Amino acid sequence: MNARVPASLFNTADVLSHATQAWDSDITARISDYIAIPCKSPGFDANWHAHGHIETVLRNAANWVAAQQVPGLTLEVLRLNDAQGRPRTPVLFFEIPAHQHDSKQSVLMYGHLDKQPEFNGWRNDLGPWTAKLETGADGAARLYGRGGADDGYAVYASITAVKALKAQNAAHPRIVGLIETCEESGSYDLLPYVDALKARLGDVSLVVCLDSGAGNYDQLWLTSSLRGMVSGTLRVDILTEGVHSGDASGLVPSSFRIMRQVLDRLEDSKTGNLLPASFHCEVPADRLAQAQATAEILKDEVYKRFPWAHADCGGSTAFALPTTTDPVQALLNRTWKPTLSVTGAEGFPALKDAGNVLRPYTAFKLSLRTPPLVDAVACMQQLKTLLEDNAPYQAKVTFEGGGAASGWNAPSTAPWLQAALDHASQAYYGAPCGYIGQGGTIPLMNMLEKGFPKAQMMVCGVLGPKSNAHGPNEFLHVDYAKKSRLPWPA
Image 1 (cartoon, rainbow, N blue to C red):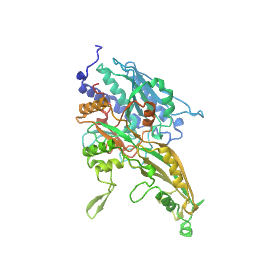
Image 2: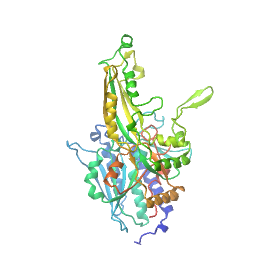
Image 3: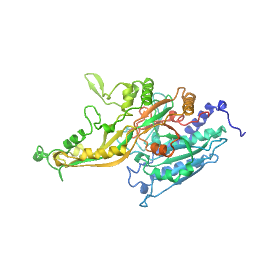
Image 4: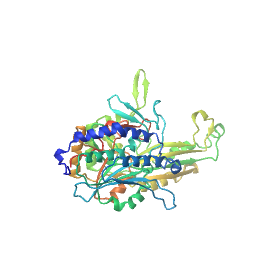
């Protein structure tokens, strides 16, 4: 039969059954294979091309997509060089023609396959490159390992959703897919591919990006905003070599103390507030209203979901505290407030090797999250001046920027998309779609919004409570992922 399936006859139970079977019989194993490959993003592996891990995961994904035999699907792995002739990270591009659909516009599906580094602190029975599937206390399956939830499952979930459409002979517009391998480094390789593919991408009316978070695992979540990021290395040199601390301390200022003074120009260490007014912006009224609605859903789970350290205090357990216990303010702090984190350090010996030596320098890797409406490039320029000028004791203070990517505030959701999201969330989860800002950064979103200013943006993902992307014990909530990109009646 070749007729379009009416919306009223779109069987969501069959769609979910189709997806569940695909995940149980195939996809979970494919993602487990992916977890085992240390395909670190080029910003963390300068020799990525020689190591071949990115090539391996991209080729594995391409072979899997081809094996699905989706009617009409064509795909290719694209490779470009930069201006110096060096290879850019490759991308996977696929096209699926419209089926019984009059629209000339395209739906763009996006994901990435590069990963963050290993990090330490993994549970004794877990590891970043060893996949482990286990059932949690809530009865849900979790697949542990680096990259499974961020974002190795995206291409598999996307194609599975399309196959579910095809299985019901459902009408759909033209679909294109773009899977990159540079996202965790800021997507600096992606724009040349977007430019090269401009004509083939077509008139994109909907972007479906599966690389974001979820407030819980009980409903579909749409990302309403993303923070930007400025990163770089701040280094303070006071000596050319280490000297005996007994001989020099009190006369030679500590490079660490100078570092503290320099950072005091940027951050109030008591409150965590960043001092430059230009790093802040006003929260739009609609985002504030969404934060209030989301706070009603999540309540104190907004902050309780983190793995807080604790201590024994006279027989009772005292847990570390968040910056606020007000759910609305907590949501705003992690999505609209600029925040500084120190994510790495250099110039320190290991504790077991730390003798009585005054160190010659201290270096910190800084990660500055900027609000969605603040220009991150301008922030980095201001940051360099703020940190380097008039150094205490005329020490050598340098800030080497590692990258800047502005945040993103989603365009207003069209009524048809909002209705479709609610329908899908009710159909597959039994609850309406939730809206939540995310503290992370997806540089692609600004690129796509500039390239396709009229397109609607469906940004979502499976990084829910305790999934811990980028950190130890990262997991993919398999039961949630099975429903994350399923189609809805339209």
